[in-house]
Image (spheres, rainbow, N blue to C red):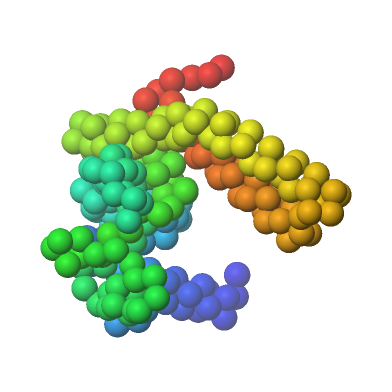
Length: 241
């Protein structure tokens, strides 16, 4: 390998490493610079970053990356949902989507559809389909590479709560069957009314869109449930075959 290639490789490594250090905080890692619009903790972004950092740790064995991932997972465990709040999407065991202790006025003070703020003036939002299964995946990958049993001992309850949240989605899937049947009937009625000259084409469109929305929501729940079950099984050592 020539000198120029070595220099380029070292430059890119240092650039990436310095960027990670700049985004690191006491709570984990930010999605962008602190003064930028995404300068806060995002569950999904933090977890995807954690999986990338674990790959670097696997290749370099640099403990910095493992410690950073542990800190990220610890913070997300602390921010896990504890109650049910439809305004923020919070559910017990659900992994947070966005956490803004400050600098959230552009979202929470706007006139149209302001985001929910808790009583402590912190913006916590849990409206994410994949953050919870990603949390389980990241926990598994971390333990797989570090064999950090103390992490499992300390956060086993959080892992179980995340799985419980996923299982709750299974109940939602069952409950959605009646919604699907109702929406299907509404679409059929709209079509019949249109053919009989007493309905509008837009009625058919609206009914069809509503049905597809419900079907998509059910598919998202099914995906989340399947993914989380697989990763929880891996984390606890269960083997399917």
